[in-house]
Every structure is written in structure tokens, then in C-alpha cells.
Length: 277
Image (cartoon, rainbow, N blue to C red; front, side, top):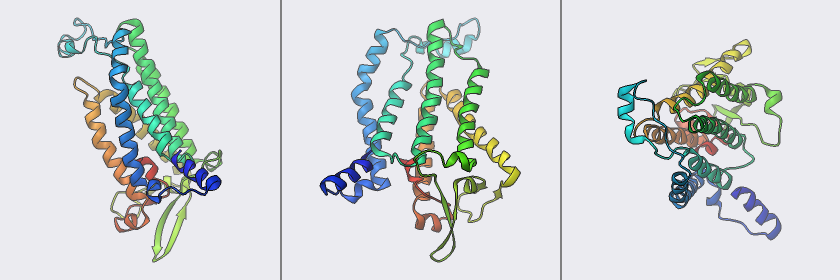
């Protein structure tokens, strides 16, 4: 939204914002600060509201799993549905600081809200039925596979990728000094790279795109379940997410800098810095 605002101010009033505000690194910092301030500001009010509504954590019955019930005993009646606050902070930061014309912005927004909504339904059912079961594993998996399949279809099918007003992401690989080969979305998604190796280790083109499709579905579904299973007694998911997010943001940032990407043998992906934001 900031980029749109800068373009609007320049078009109608001739005012130009400092260029630094459009840099990926600057917007990464401001997005982090926005999420932090939003959470600190609304967090206490949100938690008090959850306590008032008696939206507390349901613990497994001691007869079903005595050891787990003992370990989780202190979590009883701890407010749940905290993901609403986390996702709200993320979405506010996204709309303020990410480029709304980038396909990566809308891919991340769709996946985050869709899987977040799935988690919200799961928590709601636990609260409604006063047990820890929630959604069945089969139903969760069906939704996760459905969401990830839509992303895979968008990335791998040119007819779908070209739909909408956003610009599909492209990648570039240097062939010789100042000469690059450009790959459309469906071409570079099928090329599997290992960081710091110049050439792809595998190209899943033609009928092998089915393997690419399955791999994308596996990664998104697997990551979603990994977070769900890791979330435990002491906020384990949060600690893991911080480390994983930093690494992902770093590679996204490096991939969007054509000189650094070339130096480190990382594929240059246009607008991938938005992922870092």
C-alpha cells in the first residue's frame, strides 16, 4: 500500500517519498515493527477478552493419556484462539508494507488466511464440544491439500498464472556478463536448485511437472502439519518459526538482489523480496 501511496502522491501532487522507503530491506524492518507494535498494543486487551468469554484450552482426559494430561495440566483454561491476534498483525503489516501488485503478496495472503481459518475452525470445534479432538485428521488434510493444490496450479499452469491484474513472478540466470536468460513462472518452478550451486540439480519439465505439482503440495501441507504438531507445552512452534522465518526472509532478500544472487549462485527471482517483507 505504501508503494501505491507513493505513486499517487507523485502523480497528483508531485511529491516524492524518499526512495529508501521502497527498498525491501526498509520495508522488512517497518513490517516487523508494525507487527510488534500492533501485538503489544492490542495483545493485553485481546487476552482479557478471551478470559471474559471463557475461551480456554481444553486438555485431554487423564484416562485417555495420563502422562500427557499431567504435563498439559497447567495449560487448562489458558486462552486459545491467539492465532487471531497473530494473523491480524501479519495482515495489517502485509497491506501496509508489501507490494499489492506482486503475485507473492497474494499467494502468501491466501495461504496464510486459508490455513489460519482451518486452525480457527479446529479451535472452535474443540471449544464447542469441550474436548481436544477438533477437526478430524482427514478433513484437515483435505483442506490443506486443496489449498496447496491451488497454489501449485497457479505456479505451474501458464493459463492460470496469467489471470488477474498482478504480474507473474519471473526468474533470471546469468549466461555471461550482462546477459541473462529469463524463465517464466512455470519454467523456474520446475527447476530444483540447491543453495550455492549454480546449476539446477533437477529439471521437472514436461510430464514431470506432475512431480513438481506433488512436491509443492507436499511442502505446503507438510509445513502446515509440522507447525500444528510442533506447537506444544511452551510455545515450541513460535521458537521454531522465528528461526525458519529469518532464514526464509534472508534467502528471499538475497534472491531479489541480482548481483548478490549471482555471486552466491542463488537463482534471481523477481519480487521475491516481498516474501521477506
